[in-house]
Amino acid sequence: MEPETLDKYIQAGKIAAEALNYGKSLIKSGAKVKEVLEKVEAKIEQLGGKPAFPAQISLNEFAAHCCSDALDETTLKDQVVKLDVGVHIDGCIADTALTVDLSGKYGDLVKASREALDNTLKIIKPGVTLGEIGRMIHETITKAGFSPIKNLSGHGLGEFTIHASPSVPNFDNRNKNVLKEGDVIAIEPFASTGSGMVQESSPATVFTLIKDSGVRDPITRNILKEIKTYHKLPFAKRWLEQKFGANKTNFALKQLIVAECLHQHPPLFDSARGIVSQAEHSVIVGEKTIVFTRV
Ligand code: MN
Ligand code: MN
Image 1 (tube, rainbow, N blue to C red):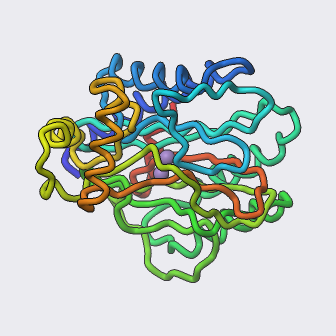
Image 2: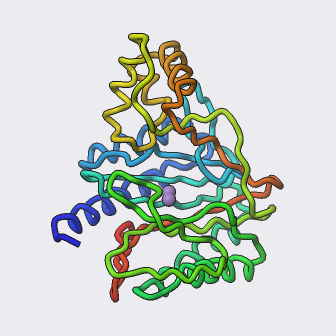
């Protein structure tokens, strides 16, 4: 890896870690989810980064992809709260997440995903197979009495690409492909009290641009111009609502979905409505693996 690129990852990781920790300090009973997310995103910009995706808070049985729209009035109470933060510097992405238990009942569940992450980080070096990583996550979580979520995975981090190859399993899928020096990947174990399989809910409030043609009306084209500034990284409906208002945003998103310009990222929840915890770090693989979202 070029030293200049390495510097960008390190910088993105530092900002992500600081924004995540700041967000953690805001996760308290009575706090508004939307305000926490806005403050975390503002912190990222203030520290000189850009969000690689909208900050997200997913509660209880929801594992991922929950992101306030402009109207969201959700207030935190006695829930299990996952905060997921992504930062990029010139397309070099850091992705990190943690769980806060406001219920006081799920400490072991929170610990299970965190220990699965810690144990996995210790074995990551060139030559380790994806299956071995999955097995470590699976064993740690099942020993604690919970299920890993099998249809969510860690992933490579490419330039301006959140979900690059390889896909890093949360169970032993016997994949014999190996990590090599310089690979940049996010490891993200999820532990669940439920089925360990997530399914999609609706509506999506996070989207990715996959095509930028085929819409004609001026409102949609104007909003598309804004979306193009996100470099085909995921964006929040809320970001557009703040700039263009709810009516124009809803109209444009509808047009863009019909024209198949957007990939939707709907909220994902455990299919048995079990409670879910998550922990995530981003690493650069090497004989001395760098966990660049860890302060
Ligand atoms: Mn993440
Ligand atoms: Mn991730």
